[in-house]
Image (tube, rainbow over all chains, first blue to last red; front, side, top):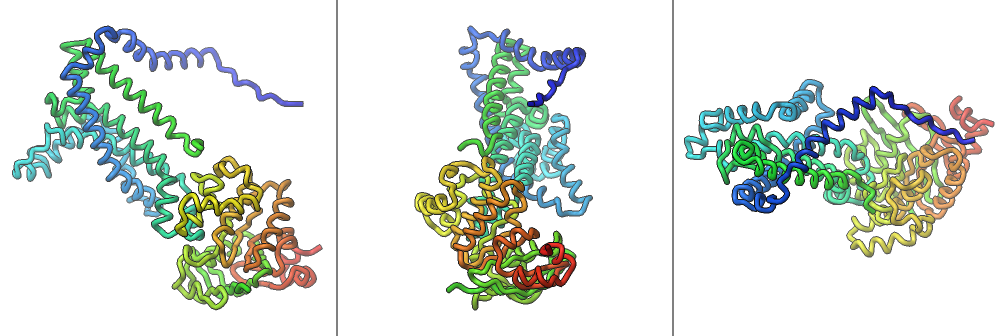
Length: 269
Length: 238
């Protein structure tokens, strides 16, 4: 006799609420796709301001993802080591990394101005030396790094936690030196997490708006990234705004697809 | 003629102290038995060089591998370990797991893989060679772990409860295979277990550890005939 698991029945009220929720998530994107000016899309996307914004967005998102990797991976290692610390410093560290994640980006932009602006805590010294940070492409990168870093840190920390450190001991008993353990065991075990974190970080940086416009402004070709260009275009040239939004949507979906493959480790044989 | 493993040391892990002395002879697998928390895994870590000694020494033949806090690092001691949960490399195939020792010894990828071939055949893993550890059964993973350790050509082999994580139904068969492979190995072998059936099938000598001390040593028959503690009597008594 084979027992069949009873199929879970969804109550009608629950199904309706879930349907509304799903429609709310999907319909705006459908509207975007339907109302997109498909006929003039090639010209719109090939226009000088769009290409400029796209180029700037890709450049700054790549650089800030790089910065997040360089500083975020060590931070993730520190965070995973903090498990052995006393309660208070451990919680403080975690909170410090979590705050930019939940902070409204505009607040992040104001905070960056107060630190690095012309009269900021540190920025005043840069200003005296003739190095103004705000309203430069560098400021865009800093704003994106500020909001995106936590995504990378937590993704890598998760990967570090999931990798059994005793596997490294096993490698040592098989004759692997420390460097070989790191190269042949630790890095491959953590790499999928780092890749997933970098992709998340990149999308977050690419979509960054609030902190960027606050700290870096909206100078065409210098700080006007795709999201800012799209927002501004909405008031003057709605079709261009839709085209820009569509472009951002396509990039996000491409990233999502890449992420899905990355998040199934061990299956690629 | 290979050399014996001599353990005469005190090891401290946290608040727990193990003090023991025993000798594992080549070709006479030694069972380290004792209840959970007796200090067996601590001794395994010390033999593998993963844990420093508090005092005393560990020798392989005339070669001292641990003396007090000084120790030959694990990667240079040639002590092979089969860990309780096997600790296979999840990102490598079965073949590359077994080829790992050859890789880190400096063999190229192709040569290391070729050297793994006889081990794959000997452990009936040939048809699983391109699988990843997540796709293996418990018994298969255990065979990979043993083949991987033996492929590193160890002077001493330590097995930490290698059957404990397996389903009861397959344990007898896996145990018989393990006994056969360990006979072939012929060098000092330490088997950590708390199962009398493992001792009977595999070990020639038995050392009983309870609460960080050796409470009895001898052959299985001697222990069964004259158990020194209630634990030994329960374990081997008829």
